Figure 1: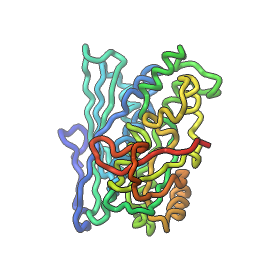
Figure 2: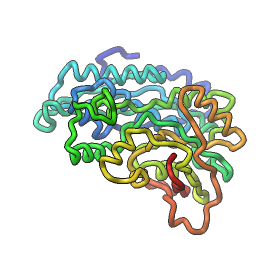
Figure 3: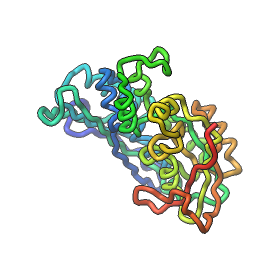
Amino acid sequence: MGGLGGFAGMMDVSFLKKYDRPLLATSTDGVGTKVAIAQAIDKHDTIGQDLVGMVVDDIVVVGAKSLFMTDYIACGKVVPERIADIVRGIAEACSAVGVALVGGETAEHPGLLGVDDYDVAGAAVGVVDAAKLLGPQNVRVGDVILGMESSGLHSNGYSLVRKIVSDSKLDYTKNVAEFGRLSLGEVLLEPTKLYTGVLNSLLESELGSAVHAMSHITGGGIAANIARVLPQGVAVDIHRSTWTPQEVFQVLASWGKFSLESVESTWNLGLGQAVVVDAAKADEVSAALTKLGVHTWTLGEIEAAPADLSSYVQGAKGVDGGAVRLVGSFK
């Protein structure tokens, strides 16, 4: 509604009448310093998907279905082709997950940003019926945590990536032996996987009631983000032996001369979303998500928290949550 060029984007929400108690959910996010790599190789057609994933995949973790999104692009100079690539990526990603792109803003900031510099941000709004709200209040001892595979780095930890590349004196535009025919920049720009469509399908199915909570593994890494969606008084061991981080993580760690375990609070290491489910339905949910196109596996089981939590991460970002630690070695 409202057409192009209006002062406000609009959406007809008369369908909300079918909800007993509709709750609106909103999220605002950006892509961080990943945009610097896009600028380095002048490739901007994947940043839009990154932005959509960062925003709407935060909304789905509370059980909400994203309705609409807006975007904001700040740049040193408006280069029409570049802006078109970014906006096209946003629009295509929104369309892929059934979210309306209802508006946006492109702001030129000469003197503040360089001619080739830009940053992107976005916000979205979704809705969930109060009775179907996901979160720590639903999690019980005995629940199982499933992991959903990431496509790679997604949109977090790029300040560390850029430092590694700089210290190693590598060029984003050049090929490196470890990644074959793709340039280093192209590998690092692998778009963020979109989980919203798959998770909406799961929540709307008969298995939806088996889902108790979800966590989007973004800034802060694995343990801290999972801890945010667990109640106090419970703990979980996430078993590294259940998956193998993708090659991009292994190569970057070797260049940086550090272990994968040491960056679990920075990179997702191949784990993009965590889903807490009823143990009796865990295998069915895992199979359903894998069938929907995202490899999913069991990470661990919720237990009563031990007295000594010194080896665990507890809560994050101001949330007093459960306790999480990673144990064992990666496959």
